[in-house]
Each structure stands twice: as structure tokens, then as C-alpha cells.
Image (cartoon, rainbow, N blue to C red):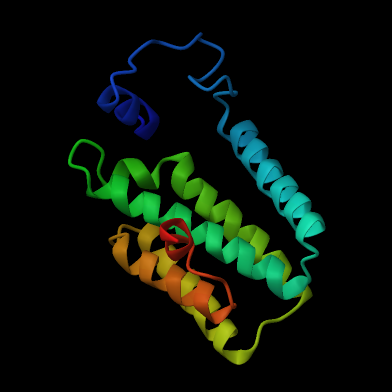
Length: 162
């Protein structure tokens, strides 16, 4: 059962989707779905960067903040016995972290971070690979926090509490 199906069942939403669409009206083709998510992130980044007047460093920080949020969601769902880490690894939730990683790689290639940011970036990439290979999600969350801080991002959880 997919992560989406498990979560829907937990929330009491077991209504089947039409056969050619998933429950959110998206294509069930993983490549089409991934491209939709990538395009959505890129458009959101561009819109926010224009509205806020972001330069390269702020763009990278924004992406790191959002990746930290997605990683924290992975941690939460992986900890649920009804869902588990394997389902999260095979979900678009971890796929979104990977898409964010690709976007952040483009930003950092265009405008390299300071040495602390570069070290945090390498540590995050190593932990993402380890998580993809079966490691727990908590170390990935710690690496995402360190990366966000090293790139000058604000704590997205502190903002929510303020």
C-alpha cells in the first residue's frame, strides 16, 4: 500500500480515485508526477524570490528551510507504525526532498556557499543517500537543520511558534 493510501486510510479517506488519476487528480505516472512537483517548487521559488527580492544566498536559504520542513514530515510519517520508513522512502514525500536537493544544487552551483555551508551541504547529501539506502530519518533531519542554519535560513518551526 502506498504512503498516500496509508495516510488516507488513517484519516478515514478511503474513497477510490478514478483509475487514470491519483486521489489528488495527478497523473499516476511517477515521471509525470515528479516533473509536476519539480515545476511547482521552481515556480514557487521564483515567485517568492521576485516578491521578496531574494539574491542567491536567500534563494538557497529558502530552499533549505523548505527541505527541512519536508524532511521533518518524513520523520513523522516514518515513525508511525501504520506507515513506516519503507513507505516513506517510496513516496513522493521523500521525492520532494530529492527535488528540493536538485534545486538547491543548482543554486549552490551558481553561487557557492561559504565553507561551513559547503561542509553542511556535503553532510546532507551523504545522509540523504544513507537514508535512501535504509538509514533512519532522524539523522537526515539533523543534517537538514544544520544545512539550513549554515546557509543562513531561519528555523521554520520557530516561525510557526512566533
